[in-house]
Length: 301
Image 1 (cartoon, rainbow, N blue to C red):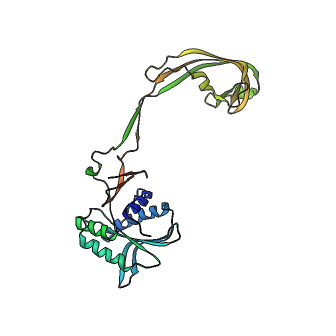
Image 2: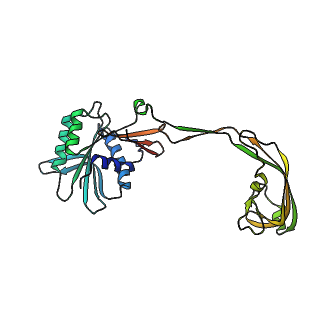
Image 3: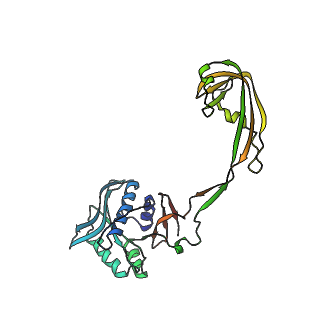
């Protein structure tokens, strides 16, 4: 089974953002390890059984030994053994045609009848036109992996900002008209901040006391309602629950109820504002964006 570049980019949607702090004296090794970290996240979400995932591996081919930056062996859903080899290039200039030819020769050299091999080149800087042509001709996947630039984010929705103006219920001077006390200790020592619920006769589910008192009494977001006297009458008497335990039967409750405006609350929902990495298919232009907290977005370009 041979995966097309589109299929393999779709599989890559299992990636998560990677935060790797690596200290290394070997040029390019840090980037190779970042690529390995991303591949390991893909492996966990690809619906396959990984049998080997290693960095800096020597693979004996038909003609010579080949150094592989990241090697991933797995068994796919049909039980077929597969291998994907990754070449990581942390370069300043776009990858040339000669580099793709050299990588293609490595992929060809390590092909095996019992384990088809796919090649993926990943770089920070993109590819020259001839390099893309080689990739398309020989079925190599060519990707860019790097933190996004201002140009990458231009004209994109970076964040959705929602500002809410909440209102806060105000409940004071609660007085209960008790018909029967069921738990004298609970009534004498009840915590005003504890769980108070009302269960009407014939109702299976209790209702929080604050909801009983505030329903219809708070006004609107634009016009909070000033504190005012209210009364709730229960006929037949309702059960008062304190911390979910029966404490008394009530005929009525009186209170002073109103609302006040709270400071505005601003929430940022999704968006590309905190993107840590961008993975781009150099042929199709499809992109995956990885947020600093593990969020993932995909776009067609």
